Image (tube, rainbow over all chains, first blue to last red; front, side):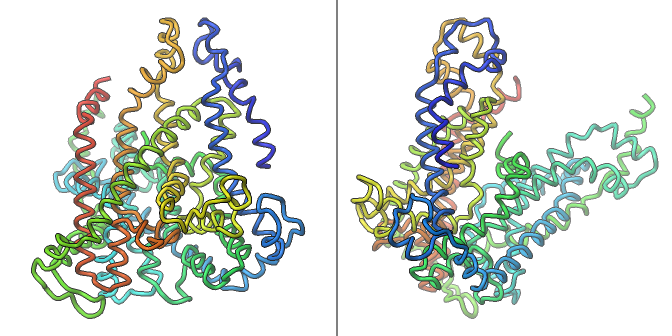
Length: 304
Length: 298
């Protein structure tokens, strides 16, 4: 697949600039300069493609190799004798526990963030009181606070709450640090709902909670998807909070499991790479199904 | 008109501040409290067990005279500048390129974004294996095979910057792609009529109009440089020796390996302040505020 992509590349920029849709988009009346292929961009894109694709190809290819094959064959050749043994080994090594923990952490974090953010954003969007607005500006400052710099106090807090080495220890701070972005995205989305719709609801006699249920929730669905994706990715791929706040095997999540596999497998690199591949599969499926949602979730709050 | 008139009455039907209470509590406890706590902890001694013991400004005077911390800070600055210099042009060019709606560009950019799907742990472990001096990919390639990318103290810094670039460029590319798509095509049409070539158009239309995004992306990189260390932790652990022990990693090691959490908190506070200060400087120096108001006016 990688090879095929690389092969089609050289003509990509040519096709790009000469294609009729481009000329139409930029107005067809202009000179022939647009027809000239953008070689520099093409070459750069090709280089970047190689840099991105080769390691990923190697990752998948090596995960299907036998250990002898890994040690003796060139890493860029396809596996001589493809095997799923590495994947079997990974599943025998506690992978299912880690996977289950990851799913629990991710689902719980998303649930908390959505449950807390939607009413808060509703208040920010519809309540002009100074209290709520001050809260909103404090939250926006939170956008700039990276979680990694506060791991020591979070560790103190979690141990004092007697939550150390529980999944809750990962869930709570992960959710808290996802809140500012989620609130920003959700508030912007609720502000876009026309005033008239809110007023119509109120005329029908709905209280604030009724408006939340009948109007806000249905209309906020795209924003809820975006913040769910953003939060889920953070939770799924999170490394530092689990590293610092858990220790036993029963609370281990995937990212830590990968690190652990490295020690456990020693020289069994194909096994490690099979575990790495497996950890990406759920997100990759999500990417195939809803690339648009995934990408907008990734840059939530920073894009326009 | 009648619906307008009723809006005063609907004012009472608006959500009360209580709707925000769960979010306030949650964010307060797990984000604001730790922020304040880290400042307090920097004035204590704490080994991670029992309670922190107040120790005055001891950690701070120690930090002032700590040569290792100074080395780590210098290294962090070098990292920040180098990775900005590498990541910004790459992300800007790919982002603008990927903003085109052509099919082949869409297909290729969906491949470019793949690193975004991998966790830090997955990326660092993958690259460790790719760069392995005995069985790695680089080992099987001509020219690259002669280097020990993670073991040679003179090149390991560049290796780490490369891996960090691989990890984060797709994110910044996404920002640039989204922003470049908002530039009106009419600007390019006018420039073409005026006889401006592609490169002139890029530097005189695209780059100036993406200033806002360049600053956002830069600020994220600056703050990230002063606080993110998970990739380096897994990739090199700060080694060989201390060649890649950037300041946030030094903070982590001081806390969670040497169990000097008070001193590590002082480093954390310093890093937070430096990150915030530098990003403020970036936004001020580039006239971010003026631009903001321009955008609102447009």
